[in-house]
Length: 393
Image (tube, rainbow, N blue to C red; front, side, top):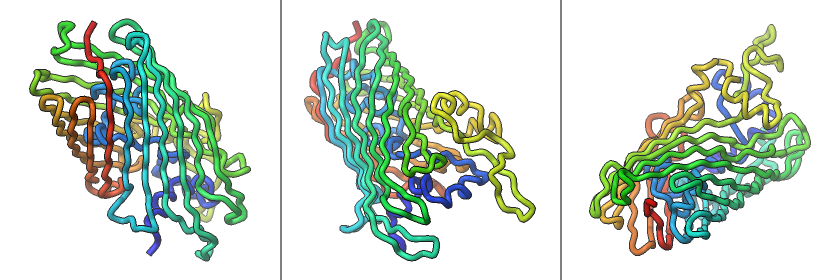
């Protein structure tokens, strides 16, 4: 039986193997960016709410969804998150893991903040084979990203942030099927805007917030020296918000929703030859080999299926968080992606405990139907937030 980590790496390796030229010429037009681990939410707290992150109360892990939230997160904080990816299918020699570290510090009377994070994804051991199925070598692919974020308030309710990110994607080295493959690096950035308010300017009143983030805007990943096989980063637009409709000293209920859209080219539909084989001539859609600025703007109208297909490229997540005395947290949510665009669909549940700034969170993901999301995914987060700052000025 083929190692399960081969399935994990397949999405990434398809960007650099020769067979991908034909694989991408299909009727599904699934978006396949490089360094797709950047789209995986490492935080157990927000995973429990269906990956709806923007509307949650700000903390140190807010940097993943919206760095502008850091100025509302308190004095400083640190966090460590871990997920044994598909843990029930792992063994001692075949570990697929996601790790994440985060820290931040506010200054200038909570009007500014800086944050740093590091993500690391290990794909386990992958067996490389040639077109005849002959084993060539075993490799341990890995990817990581290091971020730095600066956030600043604009008045009492608004804030903005920028982030810089270095990405390293090592999926394999050597010659495969007459193609030389090597690790790739890229530099990217995020831009975020956030708004938060309380009813009647009362910190104990109902809380409302929303935010927007453009993330992973940066250079392509060059896994090979062939210019036709460079991969876009998962450039992404996230819009979300939350509303705390019950906010008493004992009970808090918050409803959350986020939508996202990848800002990369949609693969076109290709013409077929007289024998029914696919050619390189485009029938519908646009040439996917574009520059970064062009790809960002045309990603809203380049799908071969028109507006209906563009709508299918939008993912949605929603959830609910209940808090008892800001000590016990119970969460649930649902995430949806179209079956023709990746088929990630799952329920999620989570629980958290917090005492004097120290919090422990756990989340469990339950895929639905024929979802391609890895089954039995667990996430854990340990965090400490100093002096969380929720005062409404």
